[in-house]
Image (cartoon, rainbow, N blue to C red):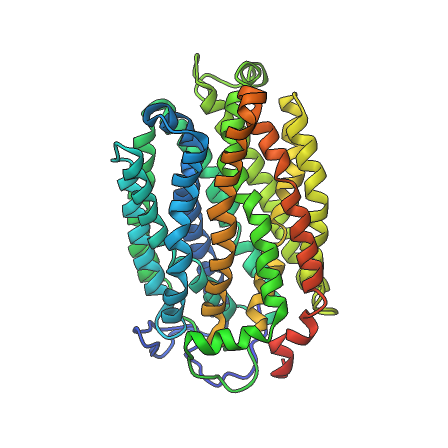
Length: 472
Protein backbone atom coordinates (compact mmCIF):
# COMPACT_ATOMS: atom_id res chain seq x y z
CA UNK A 1 0.00 0.00 0.00
CA UNK A 2 2.84 2.34 0.76
CA UNK A 3 5.41 0.96 -1.63
CA UNK A 4 9.11 0.60 -1.03
CA UNK A 5 10.81 3.37 0.87
CA UNK A 6 14.12 4.80 -0.21
CA UNK A 7 16.05 4.41 3.00
CA UNK A 8 18.63 7.13 3.77
CA UNK A 9 22.18 6.34 4.72
CA UNK A 10 22.07 3.69 7.34
CA UNK A 11 24.00 4.55 10.45
CA UNK A 12 22.90 1.32 12.09
CA UNK A 13 22.16 -1.56 9.75
CA UNK A 14 20.37 -3.44 12.50
CA UNK A 15 17.36 -1.17 12.11
CA UNK A 16 14.69 -3.74 11.26
CA UNK A 17 16.27 -7.05 12.08
CA UNK A 18 17.03 -9.06 15.17
CA UNK A 19 15.19 -9.32 18.41
CA UNK A 20 15.61 -6.73 21.11
CA UNK A 21 15.78 -7.30 24.80
CA UNK A 22 13.92 -5.03 27.23
CA UNK A 23 16.60 -2.38 26.90
CA UNK A 24 16.41 -2.35 23.11
CA UNK A 25 19.67 -4.08 22.10
CA UNK A 26 19.30 -5.80 18.72
CA UNK A 27 21.25 -8.53 16.95
CA UNK A 28 22.78 -8.37 13.48
CA UNK A 29 20.18 -8.51 10.66
CA UNK A 30 19.88 -11.49 8.36
CA UNK A 31 18.21 -9.77 5.40
CA UNK A 32 18.54 -6.59 3.38
CA UNK A 33 16.53 -3.40 3.00
CA UNK A 34 14.04 -4.88 0.51
CA UNK A 35 13.13 -7.65 2.95
CA UNK A 36 12.81 -5.03 5.66
CA UNK A 37 10.24 -3.16 3.56
CA UNK A 38 8.16 -6.33 3.32
CA UNK A 39 8.54 -6.99 7.02
CA UNK A 40 7.38 -3.45 7.71
CA UNK A 41 4.11 -4.39 6.05
CA UNK A 42 3.81 -7.46 8.27
CA UNK A 43 4.39 -5.38 11.39
CA UNK A 44 1.61 -2.98 10.37
CA UNK A 45 -0.67 -5.96 9.70
CA UNK A 46 -0.07 -7.65 13.06
CA UNK A 47 -0.49 -4.32 14.86
CA UNK A 48 -3.86 -3.92 13.13
CA UNK A 49 -4.85 -7.41 14.27
CA UNK A 50 -3.92 -6.59 17.88
CA UNK A 51 -5.79 -3.26 17.67
CA UNK A 52 -8.77 -5.13 16.21
CA UNK A 53 -8.87 -7.37 19.29
CA UNK A 54 -8.45 -4.25 21.42
CA UNK A 55 -11.69 -2.88 20.01
CA UNK A 56 -13.52 -6.21 19.88
CA UNK A 57 -12.95 -6.63 23.61
CA UNK A 58 -13.75 -2.97 24.22
CA UNK A 59 -16.91 -2.69 22.09
CA UNK A 60 -18.51 -6.14 22.13
CA UNK A 61 -20.39 -5.13 25.26
CA UNK A 62 -22.31 -2.61 23.11
CA UNK A 63 -24.28 -5.28 21.22
CA UNK A 64 -24.48 -7.45 24.35
CA UNK A 65 -26.03 -4.63 26.40
CA UNK A 66 -29.58 -5.76 25.56
CA UNK A 67 -29.33 -9.28 27.08
CA UNK A 68 -27.05 -8.03 29.89
CA UNK A 69 -29.60 -5.37 30.90
CA UNK A 70 -32.38 -7.93 30.74
CA UNK A 71 -30.52 -10.35 33.01
CA UNK A 72 -28.92 -7.88 35.45
CA UNK A 73 -31.80 -5.38 35.48
CA UNK A 74 -29.80 -2.13 35.14
CA UNK A 75 -30.84 1.26 33.72
CA UNK A 76 -29.35 2.94 30.66
CA UNK A 77 -27.37 5.31 32.90
CA UNK A 78 -25.89 2.49 34.96
CA UNK A 79 -25.12 0.52 31.81
CA UNK A 80 -23.17 3.52 30.54
CA UNK A 81 -21.22 3.69 33.82
CA UNK A 82 -20.32 -0.02 33.77
CA UNK A 83 -19.49 -0.04 30.08
CA UNK A 84 -17.72 3.30 29.66
CA UNK A 85 -16.60 4.91 32.91
CA UNK A 86 -15.45 1.65 34.54
CA UNK A 87 -13.26 0.92 31.53
CA UNK A 88 -11.94 4.46 31.15
CA UNK A 89 -10.77 5.00 34.76
CA UNK A 90 -7.67 2.81 34.58
CA UNK A 91 -7.38 2.67 30.80
CA UNK A 92 -6.73 6.40 30.75
CA UNK A 93 -4.66 6.90 33.90
CA UNK A 94 -2.38 3.86 33.61
CA UNK A 95 -1.58 4.69 30.00
CA UNK A 96 0.91 7.41 31.04
CA UNK A 97 3.23 5.31 33.25
CA UNK A 98 3.05 2.42 30.78
CA UNK A 99 3.99 4.79 27.95
CA UNK A 100 6.88 6.08 30.08
CA UNK A 101 8.12 2.48 30.08
CA UNK A 102 7.49 2.22 26.33
CA UNK A 103 9.78 5.21 25.70
CA UNK A 104 12.57 3.25 27.43
CA UNK A 105 12.00 -0.46 27.00
CA UNK A 106 10.80 -2.95 24.42
CA UNK A 107 7.40 -1.76 23.21
CA UNK A 108 6.50 -5.07 21.58
CA UNK A 109 6.83 -7.00 24.84
CA UNK A 110 4.85 -4.37 26.72
CA UNK A 111 2.02 -4.68 24.18
CA UNK A 112 2.09 -8.50 24.31
CA UNK A 113 1.75 -8.48 28.10
CA UNK A 114 -1.07 -5.94 27.86
CA UNK A 115 -2.89 -8.08 25.26
CA UNK A 116 -2.67 -11.09 27.55
CA UNK A 117 -4.11 -9.18 30.49
CA UNK A 118 -7.04 -7.54 28.71
CA UNK A 119 -7.98 -10.82 27.01
CA UNK A 120 -8.02 -12.64 30.34
CA UNK A 121 -10.21 -9.93 31.90
CA UNK A 122 -12.59 -10.10 28.91
CA UNK A 123 -13.10 -13.76 29.76
CA UNK A 124 -13.84 -12.73 33.35
CA UNK A 125 -16.68 -10.52 32.00
CA UNK A 126 -18.35 -13.73 30.84
CA UNK A 127 -18.28 -15.17 34.37
CA UNK A 128 -19.86 -12.30 36.33
CA UNK A 129 -23.25 -12.57 38.03
CA UNK A 130 -23.85 -9.02 39.34
CA UNK A 131 -23.52 -5.44 38.02
CA UNK A 132 -20.76 -4.73 40.56
CA UNK A 133 -18.74 -7.68 39.30
CA UNK A 134 -19.15 -6.46 35.72
CA UNK A 135 -17.97 -2.99 36.77
CA UNK A 136 -14.71 -4.37 38.19
CA UNK A 137 -14.22 -6.81 35.32
CA UNK A 138 -14.46 -3.91 32.88
CA UNK A 139 -11.93 -2.04 34.99
CA UNK A 140 -9.61 -5.01 34.49
CA UNK A 141 -10.07 -4.86 30.72
CA UNK A 142 -9.16 -1.17 30.89
CA UNK A 143 -6.01 -1.91 32.90
CA UNK A 144 -4.81 -4.29 30.19
CA UNK A 145 -5.73 -2.09 27.25
CA UNK A 146 -3.83 0.83 28.80
CA UNK A 147 -0.67 -0.69 27.33
CA UNK A 148 -2.04 -1.46 23.89
CA UNK A 149 -2.22 1.79 21.92
CA UNK A 150 0.39 4.46 22.79
CA UNK A 151 3.33 2.04 22.30
CA UNK A 152 1.85 1.04 18.93
CA UNK A 153 1.72 4.66 17.73
CA UNK A 154 5.43 4.93 18.55
CA UNK A 155 6.26 1.63 16.79
CA UNK A 156 4.44 2.68 13.61
CA UNK A 157 6.28 6.02 13.60
CA UNK A 158 9.62 4.19 13.80
CA UNK A 159 8.77 1.86 10.90
CA UNK A 160 7.50 4.56 8.48
CA UNK A 161 9.12 7.84 7.36
CA UNK A 162 7.36 11.19 8.03
CA UNK A 163 5.76 11.49 4.57
CA UNK A 164 3.96 8.15 5.06
CA UNK A 165 3.06 8.33 8.74
CA UNK A 166 -0.46 9.76 8.43
CA UNK A 167 -1.46 6.94 6.07
CA UNK A 168 0.36 4.33 8.15
CA UNK A 169 -1.34 5.50 11.35
CA UNK A 170 -4.66 5.68 9.49
CA UNK A 171 -4.26 2.10 8.27
CA UNK A 172 -3.31 1.04 11.80
CA UNK A 173 -6.51 2.72 12.97
CA UNK A 174 -8.51 0.37 10.72
CA UNK A 175 -8.48 -1.74 13.87
CA UNK A 176 -11.18 0.59 15.25
CA UNK A 177 -13.92 -0.04 12.64
CA UNK A 178 -12.85 -3.64 12.00
CA UNK A 179 -12.75 -4.48 15.71
CA UNK A 180 -15.96 -2.62 16.43
CA UNK A 181 -17.77 -4.26 13.50
CA UNK A 182 -16.49 -7.74 14.34
CA UNK A 183 -17.38 -7.23 17.98
CA UNK A 184 -20.90 -6.13 17.07
CA UNK A 185 -21.56 -8.95 14.60
CA UNK A 186 -19.74 -11.67 16.53
CA UNK A 187 -21.45 -10.67 19.75
CA UNK A 188 -24.86 -10.73 18.10
CA UNK A 189 -24.29 -14.12 16.47
CA UNK A 190 -22.87 -15.84 19.55
CA UNK A 191 -25.51 -14.32 21.83
CA UNK A 192 -28.14 -15.72 19.44
CA UNK A 193 -26.63 -19.20 19.09
CA UNK A 194 -25.31 -19.55 22.67
CA UNK A 195 -25.52 -16.63 25.10
CA UNK A 196 -23.82 -13.35 25.89
CA UNK A 197 -21.40 -14.96 28.32
CA UNK A 198 -20.00 -17.23 25.62
CA UNK A 199 -19.21 -14.20 23.45
CA UNK A 200 -16.92 -12.76 26.15
CA UNK A 201 -15.26 -16.11 26.79
CA UNK A 202 -14.55 -16.87 23.13
CA UNK A 203 -13.06 -13.50 22.13
CA UNK A 204 -10.97 -13.41 25.30
CA UNK A 205 -9.55 -16.85 24.57
CA UNK A 206 -8.69 -15.81 21.00
CA UNK A 207 -6.70 -12.87 22.35
CA UNK A 208 -4.72 -15.19 24.61
CA UNK A 209 -3.76 -17.21 21.53
CA UNK A 210 -2.71 -14.07 19.61
CA UNK A 211 -0.45 -12.65 22.36
CA UNK A 212 2.50 -15.10 22.00
CA UNK A 213 2.30 -14.92 18.19
CA UNK A 214 2.64 -11.14 18.33
CA UNK A 215 5.47 -11.39 20.88
CA UNK A 216 7.54 -13.87 18.86
CA UNK A 217 7.08 -12.45 15.35
CA UNK A 218 7.32 -8.67 15.88
CA UNK A 219 10.70 -6.94 16.22
CA UNK A 220 11.35 -3.72 18.08
CA UNK A 221 12.44 -0.96 15.62
CA UNK A 222 15.22 1.54 16.18
CA UNK A 223 13.78 4.70 17.73
CA UNK A 224 13.69 7.75 15.49
CA UNK A 225 15.48 6.01 12.62
CA UNK A 226 13.67 8.08 9.97
CA UNK A 227 13.97 11.35 11.90
CA UNK A 228 16.91 13.65 11.34
CA UNK A 229 19.20 14.90 14.07
CA UNK A 230 20.88 13.19 16.99
CA UNK A 231 18.76 10.55 18.69
CA UNK A 232 17.97 11.91 22.18
CA UNK A 233 17.91 9.75 25.29
CA UNK A 234 14.64 8.84 27.05
CA UNK A 235 13.23 11.43 29.43
CA UNK A 236 10.71 11.42 32.28
CA UNK A 237 7.07 12.45 32.25
CA UNK A 238 7.76 15.96 33.56
CA UNK A 239 10.07 16.96 30.67
CA UNK A 240 7.39 15.72 28.26
CA UNK A 241 4.74 17.81 30.04
CA UNK A 242 7.11 20.80 30.00
CA UNK A 243 7.57 20.35 26.26
CA UNK A 244 3.82 20.06 25.70
CA UNK A 245 3.03 23.16 27.75
CA UNK A 246 4.71 25.16 24.99
CA UNK A 247 2.62 23.39 22.33
CA UNK A 248 -0.94 24.81 22.33
CA UNK A 249 -1.80 22.69 19.29
CA UNK A 250 -1.36 19.51 21.36
CA UNK A 251 -3.99 20.50 23.91
CA UNK A 252 -6.44 21.82 21.33
CA UNK A 253 -6.09 18.69 19.18
CA UNK A 254 -6.51 16.49 22.26
CA UNK A 255 -9.64 18.27 23.45
CA UNK A 256 -11.09 18.36 19.94
CA UNK A 257 -10.57 14.62 19.55
CA UNK A 258 -12.01 14.05 23.04
CA UNK A 259 -15.26 15.89 22.27
CA UNK A 260 -15.67 13.95 19.04
CA UNK A 261 -14.95 10.71 20.91
CA UNK A 262 -17.81 11.41 23.30
CA UNK A 263 -20.12 10.75 20.37
CA UNK A 264 -17.88 8.21 18.67
CA UNK A 265 -17.76 5.87 21.66
CA UNK A 266 -21.31 6.74 22.61
CA UNK A 267 -22.63 5.76 19.18
CA UNK A 268 -20.69 2.48 19.14
CA UNK A 269 -22.26 1.69 22.50
CA UNK A 270 -25.86 2.82 22.00
CA UNK A 271 -26.76 2.56 18.30
CA UNK A 272 -27.29 -1.24 18.52
CA UNK A 273 -29.70 -0.78 21.45
CA UNK A 274 -31.46 2.06 19.59
CA UNK A 275 -31.95 -0.20 16.57
CA UNK A 276 -33.30 -3.05 18.71
CA UNK A 277 -35.78 -0.79 20.49
CA UNK A 278 -36.98 1.22 17.51
CA UNK A 279 -36.96 -1.18 14.54
CA UNK A 280 -37.93 -4.64 15.82
CA UNK A 281 -40.73 -4.96 13.25
CA UNK A 282 -38.85 -3.48 10.28
CA UNK A 283 -35.75 -5.70 10.45
CA UNK A 284 -37.40 -8.96 9.25
CA UNK A 285 -38.74 -7.11 6.21
CA UNK A 286 -35.36 -5.54 5.39
CA UNK A 287 -33.61 -8.93 5.72
CA UNK A 288 -36.27 -10.95 3.89
CA UNK A 289 -33.66 -11.78 1.22
CA UNK A 290 -31.25 -13.34 3.73
CA UNK A 291 -30.72 -17.14 3.69
CA UNK A 292 -31.67 -19.09 6.80
CA UNK A 293 -28.03 -19.91 7.61
CA UNK A 294 -27.43 -16.16 7.98
CA UNK A 295 -30.70 -15.27 9.70
CA UNK A 296 -32.43 -18.32 11.20
CA UNK A 297 -36.21 -18.34 11.40
CA UNK A 298 -37.39 -16.48 14.47
CA UNK A 299 -34.01 -14.74 14.93
CA UNK A 300 -34.00 -12.04 17.63
CA UNK A 301 -33.79 -8.37 16.69
CA UNK A 302 -30.35 -8.33 18.30
CA UNK A 303 -28.97 -10.44 15.43
CA UNK A 304 -30.46 -8.17 12.76
CA UNK A 305 -29.08 -5.09 14.51
CA UNK A 306 -25.61 -6.61 14.74
CA UNK A 307 -25.44 -7.26 10.98
CA UNK A 308 -26.89 -3.85 10.16
CA UNK A 309 -24.69 -1.67 12.33
CA UNK A 310 -21.62 -3.85 11.89
CA UNK A 311 -21.77 -3.20 8.14
CA UNK A 312 -22.18 0.56 8.69
CA UNK A 313 -19.17 0.73 11.01
CA UNK A 314 -16.94 -1.43 8.81
CA UNK A 315 -17.63 0.26 5.46
CA UNK A 316 -17.99 3.82 6.68
CA UNK A 317 -15.15 3.59 9.20
CA UNK A 318 -12.50 2.23 6.85
CA UNK A 319 -13.44 4.68 4.09
CA UNK A 320 -13.29 7.68 6.43
CA UNK A 321 -10.09 6.72 8.23
CA UNK A 322 -8.09 6.04 5.07
CA UNK A 323 -9.38 9.15 3.27
CA UNK A 324 -8.41 11.35 6.23
CA UNK A 325 -4.91 9.86 6.38
CA UNK A 326 -4.35 10.09 2.62
CA UNK A 327 -5.48 13.73 2.53
CA UNK A 328 -3.19 14.58 5.45
CA UNK A 329 -0.14 13.07 3.72
CA UNK A 330 -1.04 14.86 0.50
CA UNK A 331 -1.93 18.30 1.89
CA UNK A 332 0.03 18.34 5.16
CA UNK A 333 3.37 18.55 3.39
CA UNK A 334 2.52 21.97 2.00
CA UNK A 335 0.85 23.35 5.12
CA UNK A 336 0.91 21.71 8.55
CA UNK A 337 -2.37 23.39 9.50
CA UNK A 338 -4.14 20.92 7.20
CA UNK A 339 -3.52 18.15 9.74
CA UNK A 340 -6.14 19.91 11.89
CA UNK A 341 -8.32 21.48 9.21
CA UNK A 342 -9.14 18.22 7.43
CA UNK A 343 -10.80 16.62 10.48
CA UNK A 344 -12.34 19.96 11.53
CA UNK A 345 -14.26 20.24 8.25
CA UNK A 346 -15.22 16.57 8.53
CA UNK A 347 -16.72 17.17 11.99
CA UNK A 348 -18.68 20.17 10.74
CA UNK A 349 -20.33 17.91 8.15
CA UNK A 350 -20.87 15.05 10.59
CA UNK A 351 -23.51 16.68 12.82
CA UNK A 352 -26.25 17.31 10.20
CA UNK A 353 -25.88 13.84 8.67
CA UNK A 354 -26.08 12.26 12.13
CA UNK A 355 -29.32 14.10 12.86
CA UNK A 356 -30.82 13.19 9.47
CA UNK A 357 -29.96 9.52 9.93
CA UNK A 358 -31.30 9.34 13.46
CA UNK A 359 -34.57 11.10 12.56
CA UNK A 360 -35.43 8.70 9.73
CA UNK A 361 -37.94 5.88 10.25
CA UNK A 362 -36.66 3.89 7.27
CA UNK A 363 -33.91 1.36 7.95
CA UNK A 364 -32.74 1.46 4.32
CA UNK A 365 -32.37 5.24 4.45
CA UNK A 366 -30.67 5.08 7.85
CA UNK A 367 -28.10 2.61 6.51
CA UNK A 368 -26.91 4.82 3.66
CA UNK A 369 -27.13 8.11 5.56
CA UNK A 370 -25.27 6.75 8.59
CA UNK A 371 -22.36 5.66 6.39
CA UNK A 372 -21.54 9.35 5.92
CA UNK A 373 -21.26 10.50 9.57
CA UNK A 374 -19.50 7.25 10.45
CA UNK A 375 -16.84 7.98 7.83
CA UNK A 376 -16.55 11.69 8.60
CA UNK A 377 -16.39 11.21 12.36
CA UNK A 378 -13.38 8.87 12.07
CA UNK A 379 -11.44 10.85 9.45
CA UNK A 380 -9.54 12.63 12.24
CA UNK A 381 -7.47 9.61 13.26
CA UNK A 382 -4.74 9.67 10.60
CA UNK A 383 -4.16 13.45 10.54
CA UNK A 384 -4.32 14.05 14.30
CA UNK A 385 -2.28 11.01 15.32
CA UNK A 386 0.39 11.91 12.76
CA UNK A 387 0.50 15.47 14.08
CA UNK A 388 1.11 14.19 17.62
CA UNK A 389 4.13 12.21 16.41
CA UNK A 390 5.71 15.40 15.05
CA UNK A 391 4.88 17.79 17.89
CA UNK A 392 7.44 16.04 20.14
CA UNK A 393 10.84 14.36 19.50
CA UNK A 394 10.98 10.56 18.96
CA UNK A 395 11.96 9.82 22.57
CA UNK A 396 8.75 11.47 23.83
CA UNK A 397 6.25 10.00 21.40
CA UNK A 398 4.80 7.16 23.48
CA UNK A 399 4.43 9.34 26.59
CA UNK A 400 2.91 12.24 24.63
CA UNK A 401 0.51 9.80 22.95
CA UNK A 402 -0.49 8.43 26.36
CA UNK A 403 -1.21 11.94 27.65
CA UNK A 404 -3.42 12.49 24.60
CA UNK A 405 -5.16 9.15 25.24
CA UNK A 406 -5.66 10.15 28.88
CA UNK A 407 -7.54 13.27 27.80
CA UNK A 408 -9.36 11.60 24.92
CA UNK A 409 -10.58 8.61 26.87
CA UNK A 410 -11.43 10.25 30.19
CA UNK A 411 -13.65 12.69 28.32
CA UNK A 412 -14.69 10.63 25.30
CA UNK A 413 -14.90 7.08 26.54
CA UNK A 414 -15.56 7.92 30.18
CA UNK A 415 -18.34 10.45 29.61
CA UNK A 416 -19.80 9.76 26.15
CA UNK A 417 -21.44 6.44 26.95
CA UNK A 418 -22.75 7.76 30.28
CA UNK A 419 -24.04 10.98 28.69
CA UNK A 420 -26.15 9.21 26.07
CA UNK A 421 -27.46 6.75 28.67
CA UNK A 422 -28.36 9.59 31.05
CA UNK A 423 -30.08 11.57 28.30
CA UNK A 424 -32.00 8.46 27.26
CA UNK A 425 -33.28 7.97 30.82
CA UNK A 426 -34.13 11.70 30.98
CA UNK A 427 -36.12 11.57 27.72
CA UNK A 428 -37.82 8.25 28.52
CA UNK A 429 -40.74 9.87 30.37
CA UNK A 430 -41.61 11.88 27.25
CA UNK A 431 -40.54 9.57 24.41
CA UNK A 432 -40.64 6.09 25.93
CA UNK A 433 -38.80 3.46 23.87
CA UNK A 434 -37.74 6.20 21.40
CA UNK A 435 -35.73 8.08 24.03
CA UNK A 436 -32.38 6.92 22.59
CA UNK A 437 -33.24 8.50 19.23
CA UNK A 438 -33.45 11.95 20.83
CA UNK A 439 -30.49 11.28 23.10
CA UNK A 440 -28.29 10.59 20.08
CA UNK A 441 -29.50 13.68 18.25
CA UNK A 442 -28.75 15.90 21.24
CA UNK A 443 -25.14 14.75 21.23
CA UNK A 444 -24.47 16.09 17.74
CA UNK A 445 -23.36 19.38 19.27
CA UNK A 446 -20.14 17.72 20.46
CA UNK A 447 -18.97 17.38 16.85
CA UNK A 448 -19.40 21.14 16.38
CA UNK A 449 -17.35 21.84 19.51
CA UNK A 450 -14.65 19.46 18.24
CA UNK A 451 -14.53 21.25 14.88
CA UNK A 452 -14.04 24.62 16.56
CA UNK A 453 -11.17 23.34 18.72
CA UNK A 454 -9.39 21.78 15.73
CA UNK A 455 -9.72 24.92 13.63
CA UNK A 456 -8.13 26.83 16.50
CA UNK A 457 -5.37 24.20 16.72
CA UNK A 458 -4.57 24.68 13.02
CA UNK A 459 -3.28 28.18 13.80
CA UNK A 460 -0.43 26.78 15.94
CA UNK A 461 0.72 23.65 14.10
CA UNK A 462 3.32 25.26 11.86
CA UNK A 463 5.11 26.71 14.86
CA UNK A 464 4.73 23.59 17.04
CA UNK A 465 6.01 21.12 14.43
CA UNK A 466 9.09 19.63 16.09
CA UNK A 467 10.41 17.78 13.00
CA UNK A 468 10.90 21.02 11.06
CA UNK A 469 12.98 22.46 13.91
CA UNK A 470 15.17 19.36 13.72
CA UNK A 471 15.71 19.92 10.06
CA UNK A 472 13.44 17.19 8.71
